[in-house]
Amino acid sequence: MAEIDDRLLRIVFDVAVHSMDFGSGFLDDEEVAALREVAVVLGVDPAVATPRNFTCKYRGHHAAGPYCPDCGRRWDALDDTSVQDDGPPAATS
Image 1 (cartoon, one colour):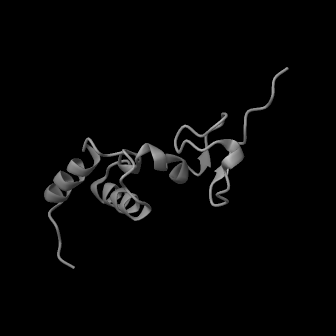
Image 2 (tube, helix red, strand yellow):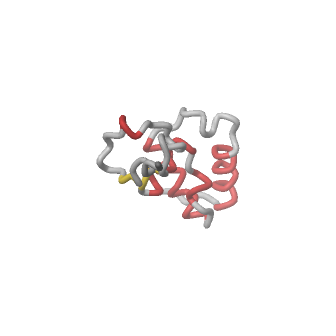
Image 3 (tube, rainbow, N blue to C red):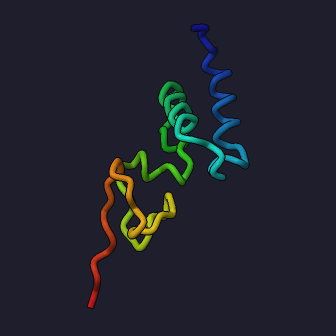
């Protein structure tokens, strides 16, 4: 595999994560995983390369509330067993 100058890799990375399209839902799992790996190589927090609709996947759980603000799924529709959740908030009286 050919080596790529870190400076050039950083330019391409910045173009990708600072694009107006970043986070608009056009990236798939493979592309987000690749961006996160490049972030690590560059010494950048992988969260920078993670669109909002993927953050619950990489955080390891869904945020508490009536729906997950990251992926937008309602608690009653959550069926992804690969992601743990905090569950819906406790009912208050």
